[in-house]
Length: 505
Image 1 (tube, rainbow, N blue to C red):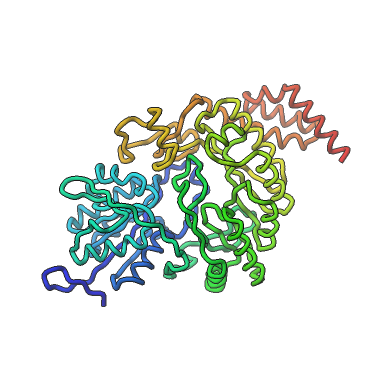
Image 2 (image 1 turned 60 degrees about the vertical axis):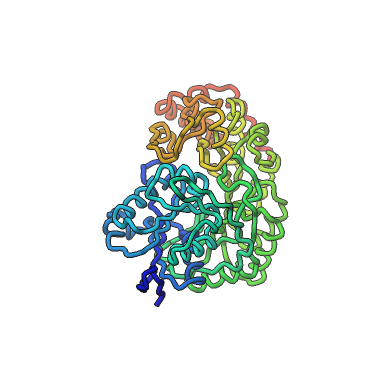
């Protein structure tokens, strides 16, 4: 049994509970793509605690169906853990705070530790705003959580522990950063889960294939202004170890698909090639999905296809070269078009991701984006493209710009109440602020409607003239705003040109 001395000669079992908050449900379009994913960060923490200590650790994933509509009192009221670790994204920050408040009120002597992608970027704001949280872990927590648990259990000072922010003598103390985990293959694996707990299917693929998620790397070498992990050192696992894990999961859970949850699976061509060759050599007969960059060597797509890649998403963000440069995307429109055409030729389903209301974006930039979306969606197997407004996230360049320009007021806290009805109108989550720069907010609704109309007229180009007129009249009845397309000489000229091209091809 794992025992610890409480400082008075009395031996007690030390218990740690790791918690993932539930996502709030607002009934908006952005929730349509949510899936129940394993809480990788908590799994890694639990595995590290179990490997390096004798403490008892349990994971409470409140996103699981069994916890739906269950009061916190039922979940934590009788809990006897001494340490509670709570992770959160910006989306779930209010739920995380609610949990911290309940735990501290019910068990005032316990230690509440917060970590994850949200808390790490606003540690001081967290401690100033949420007295129920004792410590914030910044960065990757596998090393930090073990050192914290040992220090807390032995009643030792925590001033030497790197990567934490905490209160000391009524003030906030910020210890130096802990180094990122370099040897990802050395991290212990957490296996106490079943496929039925986290049912998963291959992303972005029309056929419903049982799948499992795997991570082959951490970090991202790119510096997109909207990303919370921009510039985080990129590290990879050994290709053999990755495919060993995949093969074990295939056998254990009878899955035929894998979703690679790397921030960018194609970031390192050598790593990508090694993993693909390992899968090819083992003849796994596996289908898989990943996130990709558009500026990769197109030869890599051939290797990916041979290894089983059938679907991907690619971050494009804008159809304006000026904006792509402004947001540090470092891709060209030619690369985007070439990537998507190659995916279409190889029958790899691809969903390009776009954003609007980016820094400095004007109407002409937005028009270029809509033009590119329509152009890409005409390719077989490409799209429908994702298109959403830019959100302000802590720790991003977008957040820094927002403070500098006054979009976020001085003294703004990520924990003050925030709810935007306008976000809901856009189909977006209402608890995260929009980034609104050059474009008038009224334009946001209009641009979404314009994209919807342009998509309909793009599909109509494949119709005969009689069907086109009939559908056009019906569309006018439902959406009078489509008038500018129905009676557009430019549109009909384009329609006739496309028909001539079809006849000649």
